[in-house]
Image 1 (cartoon, rainbow, N blue to C red):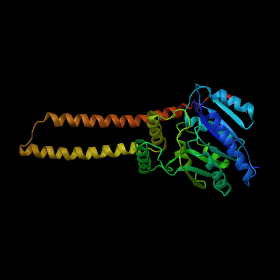
Image 2 (image 1 turned 90 degrees about the horizontal axis):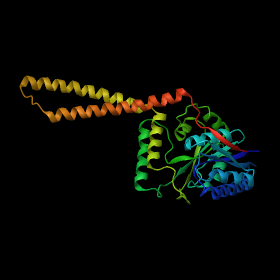
Image 3 (image 1 turned 135 degrees about the vertical axis):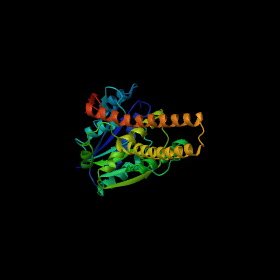
Image 4 (image 1 turned 60 degrees about the vertical axis):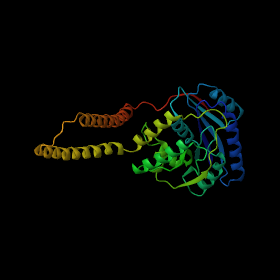
Length: 313
């Protein structure tokens, strides 16, 4: 008998959690009724240090049905850490695991199609948005630009895919062998090499509550994605430095020629512009290198990715 577990990271989701869980339970029942896998199913909710009544709701749901399990962090460790914790717990008993956010903006009805594709032999099924009409022009444009930049940097990423996916047990077990702490899940999973496929859906607005990814968090997440998956920015600095050196050699030759011809002009503006430009370039370069050194320091320390305070079986 195959087992399906749905993992839900939740942070301050008291307004939507009860209705979302009920909808997912109904979907699991519908899948079980029509599916040839003869599977059982449950839901694992990871409370990422919520400050509202999210954990109280999880406790109540756990008392109402044994199909609801819960993990509670001691504080807010972040969305990716919550996903990792849920996956580590779910893989112990599940044959396939679906991850989806608590707001259900990703279409949960597509889970049935994911299970079908798993039955057909897919180890990883990506949920991919087929349009971004619900996004603002700014968010839509920056998202598409981000995917293009990552592609140029050599990062293998599924465009318009977030963290709505199904993974088989063996794919999960392989993924969880990756030890790094600074992890960008959606960029790492394509590296596993298992049989993959996609299902397409239209994202809907939140039923209630506020987005947990304001602009500042989105920018931080995007930068983490780049620095966690590629050293291309450091290589770019090397290229820029080499070009700057070549430019300096050319300018030296030009200055000597102008001096011999007696055409030199003492210009304060050009000198200051050069100093500020080179100084700014050096500061940016040091900042990028510092980001990588900082990540290495965190990895070397080997601190835990999260701390679990409570477990509901």
